[in-house]
Image (cartoon, rainbow, N blue to C red; front, side, top):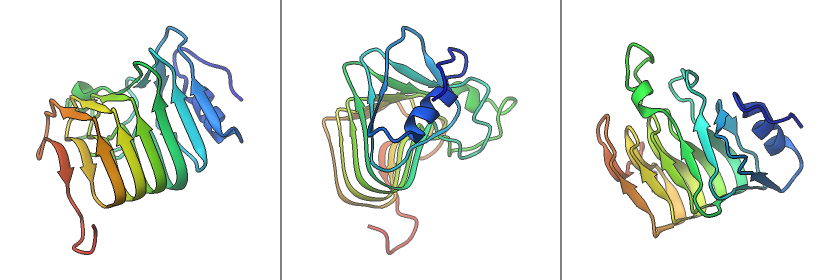
Amino acid sequence: MCGFNDIDATDALQSAIDSTAHTVRVTNRAVVWSIRPVVLRSNLTVVFEDGVVVRALRGAFHGESDALLTASHVTNISLLGEGNATLAMWRSDYANRSMYTHSEGRAALMLHSVHNLRVDNLQVSHSGGDGLYLADIYTAHITNVRSLWNYRQGMSIIEAFNTLVEHSEFSFTAGTAPASGVDLESDRPTQR
């Protein structure tokens, strides 16, 4: 695994996620974990210790669909906060068209085709799109999540089966329409 770098911690985090460990702990090193987009794999629990801040590396995320954490076509993913853990981006930067191409797709958590998902006790804020974007989700429990100050939505659900969201807050969305807390927005008539 790669060592921690306090300027860009992407390689350290991605290396830990790509390992064979079932549980990866993001420790509170009294510094921010600044990262480029990170991709999650199947059969993984990521624990964010109390006080941890994982933040988008400033000046990165120029791709119109770059997300802080992405899980696609995977099973058994858990993202768990202990105490006060935060996943954050730079919403005001992405909204500045002199710095970034306009996009509504820079989500904090981009979750697509995930079976057996758990997200618990995290604050997700200041994304350049949705705090949480869920598409083709099969069996999920999202609880104690605070999704705040995101650019497009607090959470978008495109399609989800057996999904429970409880004890969560989706507030202060501002930037681009529809600017909702939670939006159920299927792309096709066949989606549920």
